[in-house]
Image 1 (spheres, one colour):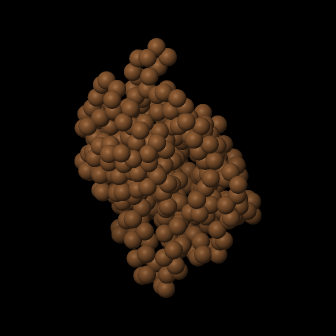
Image 2: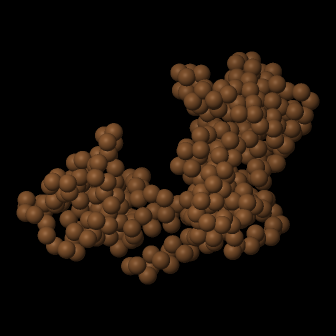
Image 3: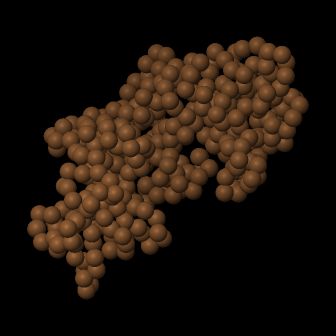
Length: 372
């Protein structure tokens, strides 16, 4: 991947990952449901000729039309084996099974998914609203004298903003010789006046060449490069000793500056989603399903290139579902880009994304209240 950037901000499914039993219990209650697991007695699917038969927990054959209709609506794939189906229509977890590769798969109640989707909106909204605080803190720390920890971490956050690089992982660097921002070596960057050029092998063996033009960042990176040791990014502690930084330090800085539990992953999801809504809106409405698929594919490929991911990983992990949904239903084109407010420090694509997320969240919560 070869990218050159100036120092400015970068222009589904029924399976839901349950973060913890306590969170699932809370969200199930919020949806007006009961918490359920496949350790409880449930309905079992058994092969019967070309189709299936369903047996209740007591072994009797299920014949109730309403229950059979509920099971059909779950759309459990025929290839799944060891299928368990919740005996209650109000269980938050409605079905589990193993796919052809032996991976456990889940089917959740629509109201539970709606609560989870609303929480996804809330997290990204909170991140967008916290960005001005973060950027104000970064500007202040970049102006510090010397090479203290806060200044180097602010440099890393600013580079994350400009380049959308992965933050890096020590284990990946050690075991796979693949690098991210915090694990770069001094050999991975060339400094020429105000210009930085990063060249390194990233995750999955992908080669990256990323150019950045910013006099202040170039001066700081050159000073880091001159410190002893192979690691590029390090700071000088109070005793003058060199200390390296890791991804945990960057995530800690993000949490402290925003006042919330955000990480570099949230940063990349925000960046990918903001780029996507800007590109989708600029491309305009699609005339028919075929053109819509083509435009969406093109945008995802462009976002993936900016983030250094494959299109599949980009869509699954770094593109908020609201971006795709709003393009598909046309609501993206009904939004006006909010005017920039003093001290807001969000670009047009970011303001559009924040407005979109707020509207989708209101819609989801309204739908959830009516469904309950």
